[in-house]
Image (cartoon, rainbow, N blue to C red; front, top):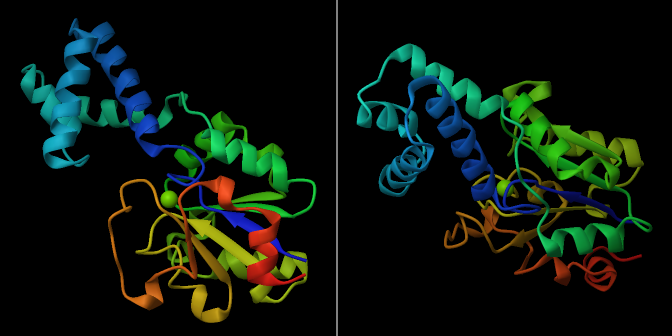
Length: 226
Ligand SMILES: [Mg+2]
């Protein structure tokens, strides 16, 4: 028996769609509260995102419109984190989960803010496919990837050896390095912001795919056996 475990961000859905959905919510907040054009606000946030990444996006948009204060930055952050995300499973993810669900116990393992990740899980409707969705931060930040903590829980729960458990993720910095050496099987999906990152072998997955359509029962049994 094989157990199939998925990462969420940039594995099952496109994380940039979450960012855009959050920017829309913040732009709406700025439009309602401060009379700023939401289109302009979104444009400014996207320019900042492209130039400097996510760190200063809200500072930057508030400074641009001359309304910066620590308080409004925190309000924007709260709006972003608590908004109902407008996100959906990628087509290949939907197909893959539907195909595998009848025959394999499946789990989700995701890092990140507990409330934010939970809202993504709900918005994507992932729970219907999974025996359980592990949001690692619920167990303490020290148990986030690359910690194998929740992967041990999955193997215990399914009463299988580690080499019967397969993890599919996109981030070679943390998705594989903690579990591969213990015998878990690992697959890297080549998409998202880490697609061009090459790491030393201990960080890399056992196998690479470009679409979840490649994650077939045949591939699973080739990697894990029956
Ligand atoms: Mg990911």
